[in-house]
Image (tube, rainbow, N blue to C red; front, side, top):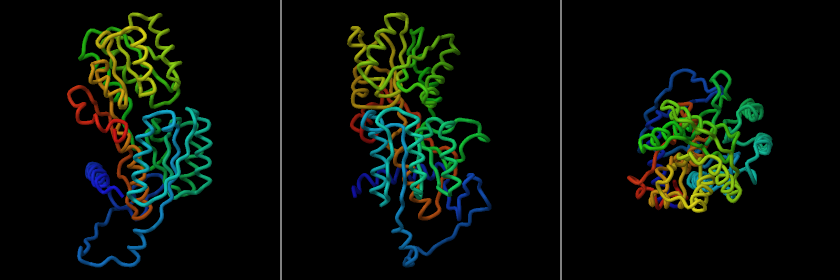
Length: 353
């Protein structure tokens, strides 16, 4: 075990535990309803642990993770998966990841079915399409499997939404809204485009909606440009769009899979830093480089390492000790990285950030 990494992660986790006032439950109901009061028991720190307690510490935990994204074709997910892998090693649990070879919500729904059939101790799932995923996730909850949403949650009204334990991830609407604020503070731009590599992914759509809503307050129009996870194809799409819309001077990309084609588009069009305004969600070594040279104003950090780590942490705590999150949302973002703080995260981009 890497004790330096474990110490860092435990400090972060304990900070979140204090921030969200986590508590111990005798049993956590499937409908996320808190029943009764929490009894605090003072223990003697010098007392030797019982055999039963020691057995609990060694209790195996089998977690299934179902994700719509994968490290193989989206670098953002490399960081998320590292978080889950590290948590599994640090906490001594088993994590089985089910994912797809491209953005495919139907295939992801089938993977949820597979996970439920395996009857894991805990299920963590990206709720990329709440309507499509509703039935299989509720089936897991009805079967007594605790469910934690990560990266993407159910944004429907509470009375309609899936009653999972908590959502671990960023507030994507606020990320887009605050991106609009940053663009306005930079000044000079008059028309925006939100470059979405996974149209239909409800949380990515929310990023564009947040941007549009903020810019509309100042009378600025925002369009959504759908691209793909194919870099060359996306670069061509951007060039064609710019040729037809030369007045666009603000670009928000929604992750490395749309940011990298944007940088290739800039080079192909002969655009210099400052010719257009650009911001992006997420970090990568390339995005860090472009923030440093002025091509990008900012990156919006959702802390993907914690997005992957915390659901495994909560799953282990819940299964072994009955300790669960006390809030519907465990927020990991948004946070902004720009030229003022890029040095702090530069070496961590692509691994822990």
